[in-house]
Length: 360
Ligand code: DP6
Image (cartoon, rainbow, N blue to C red; front, side, top):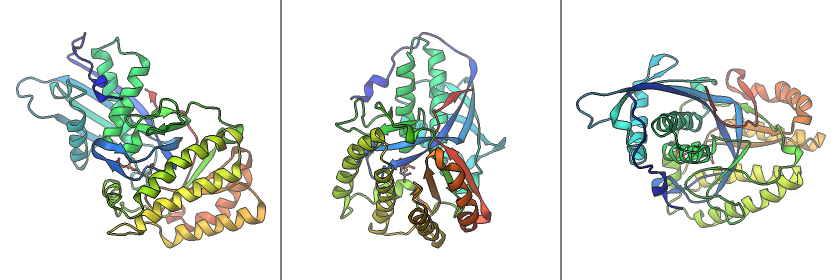
């Protein structure tokens, strides 16, 4: 697939001012994206559950500029407070997407954004934040070019979100999204995320994700640096091949509802992600002692009760506890009584599978 299809050509409308607003959720990968090529092209395909409660709400107001249009013009507010430290990321994003949104320098943008989860929770806001921003910009393009179809709109929004942050391209739709070309997933490609197109067993409907906030500090290693450490990594090829194999496996698991196989695959993916970090050069450990305490408790509880509780991790110390809705009462009781003690200030977030971004 070629990215030039995302260049629309001449717009049919002219605008002087207006606004656009979207809320977009975070997502949690089951098969992880770790390693990318130039232009945010992933080294391997990944698949994620779209989340529901953890989201970013963004509103952009735009106004036609007079005079010099050689640079981007925008201001950004988080919870109504000016946020100049967001500028470099947005500037980089605008530079990457300008070729696809030729109106970017013609307007001044006032961006107001807020997250439903605390900013200092250690939860990455790049997936929800970049996808919400990309959707707002696409709504502006739609106002300039109303003929744009719904499917082209969502694909281009995911394409743009990817250029902001790779995993962001998996946040627009739900409940499962695949990003990265895979021979067994129809429509899958490296440029944008696609809604998982096959049958999903009822066991996975409304799957629960309780996020245990073990460490709310700033990320020790930015994900871009982490991805780059996969270049020349001694196990890179094996890892990328493994991810391709795991997408094939998870397709069968999602259809059959085999929770035991699901648990084994998802936990192995999480630990492999961290193993890649531990075996890169330079190497790093993002898990904390409490991350391991929680993992061990989950394993003992699973062994004792036979309940299908599992975990996954992002590039950090927080633990996502995953379980079917039908076991939610017992498992949440266990989480509250045994795991929350390992969270920083006892903080955790109850989330579950969601269905993607919404215009507001
Ligand atoms: C560990 O999407 O944050 O969460 O493309 O550099 O912005 P950039 O990286 P990012 O990487 C996320 C990696 C991960 C796994 C995943 O979500 O698949």
